[in-house]
Image (cartoon, rainbow, N blue to C red; front, side):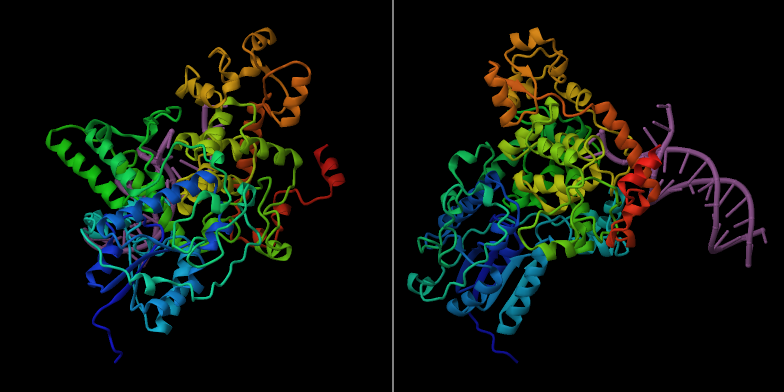
Length: 608
DNA sequence: CAAAGCGTTGAAACG
DNA sequence: CCGTTTCAACGCTTT
C-alpha cells in the first residue's frame, strides 16, 4: 500500500470555473484540509494560438481571472490565482515535482480537446502517484449521464433532455454550495519560486489569432510569466491594442453575481421571461440577461442560476402567479444548453464538424470544409475550406464584415464584432442568412466567425445552434426562413437598432431603413449617405473621389430570389438524405449524388 | 400554398 | 378471448 501523506499539498487547477461560489471541485479540494493549497491557471498555448479568440473575449477572460485572484487575496493575503505559462501536459509534472503536490483537483471540462487533455493529465498524474479528483460543476447534469439515460445516443430534443434528466435526481440538479470562507496558504515565497525550473517553450505555428497581434507577443518567455510573478497576462503581453477592445461587457465572478442578483430581484422579469418574446433589437439594456459569457468562463455557476430562478418560480406559484413554461422560460434555456453538452459528449471531436458526424445532415453548401486528410497534407497554415464559388466567398466576407447591404444583418454583425455579443434571435437571423436563407454557405464558416467574436463562445452551444439554424440537426423546418427585412421591421420598427450600429444610415427615414436602396437618390443625398458599391474600403474611396462623403452598400443579392434558390436546394439535399458519416461524404463522391461532379461543358448541355 | 421528422396514440392485425 | 405488435394518423416542434 502506498504511503499517503497526512498533510495534503493540493494543486487546484482552474479552467472554465473562474469562481469561488458553488464549485463542487473547489469545495472538495478544501475539504481535504490541505497544509498547502495552490490555485493555478495554465495559460495553455493551445487556447492562445489554436482556438479562435477575438479581443473582447481575451479581455473577458482576463477580467474573470483578475476578479478571482482578488477574491483569493481577500480570503488570504498570501493567496492569488497563480498563472503558469506553458501547456498543461508539460508544465503540470514540473509543478508536482517542484511543489511536492499530493492531490490535483479540477472541475470536469466538456469539449473534446479539454477531455483529451484531462485524460492525458490524469494518466501522467497516475504515473507520478498524484491523486486526482474530478467533479462535475459546469452543467446541471453530468452530460455523460444524460447520454447514458438516452440509450447512449445524443439527445436531440427538449423532451429527450427532460426524460433523461428526470432519471437523475428526478430532474432536480444539486443545490448550489456556498463559497469558502477561508483558504489555506500556498508555500512560502522561496518554495513557490520556479526560476530554477526549465521553461519548455511553445509552438506558435498556425496562430489563428495572429491578425489581432498589433504589438509584440510577449506571453511566453518563462513559466512564471514575463515579470516572474505568476501574474495574469495583460492585453499588451498578448499583443492586443487597447483600442481593439470595444465592447461594454465585462467579466468576473463579482460582476456575474451582481447581474444575477439584479434580475432575481425583478420577480416579474424572471417569472414571465420567454425567450421568443425578448427583443433582438434592444440595447442599453438588452432584453436578455447576458449571463452566457459568465456561464462559459464559470464566473457564474449554472446551478446557482437555475435554483435562484426556481426559487422565484416557487414563490410566485404560492402567490398564484403564472410562470412562463418550459422550454421558453429561463430554466428551459439552461436545458437547451444541457442538450448541446450531451450531444457533444456523445460524439467527441466528430460533433464539431460535418465530416464523420452521423447526427448532421449533409447539404451541398458553398465553402465546404476541407477533409482532415486535406488539412493534414496542407499543414497548419492551410485555408480551412474550399472556395468552390468566388461569389459565395465574396458574400461570406461581406456577411462577416457587416457590409451585405441588408442593414438588419449588417447591424447585427457589426454589434457582434464590436461588442462580442448579440441577442439569440439576432444570431438566428444572421445564421439563417449565411446558410439556408441567403448565401448557401456552410454553417461551419459561420461557426468559426462566432467562435472568434462571441465572448460567450461555448463549443457545444455554438456548434449545436449552427446545426439548428442551418437545419442540419436538431431542427428541420427549413421552409421557415428569416427575412432580413420583415424580421428586422418586426423587432425594430423605428430602426433605432440599425441606426446605432450602421450610423451611416442614421438619418434615413424608418420607411427605408431596412431597404435603403429603395430610397430616392434625392433623399439619399438629403440624408447624407449614398447607397452604392459593396461597402469595401476601395468602393468607399471611389465614391469619396466623386464627392460622396458617406456610402452604404447596395444589397449583395436579391433576397427573395436567394430564398427561393435556397429552399429548392434544401429540399433537394433533404431528398438525397446524406449525413456526415455517409461514405459519399467521407470520400468526396457526394458531388455525384448532387449532380455537380460533371465537367462544366456537360453541365451546360444538361441545363438545356 | 406546401415543404420534415419525432413521439404519442389508438385501432387493427396478429399469434 | 387476450396480450402483443404494427402502423397510420396526428400533434408538436423555443422564436
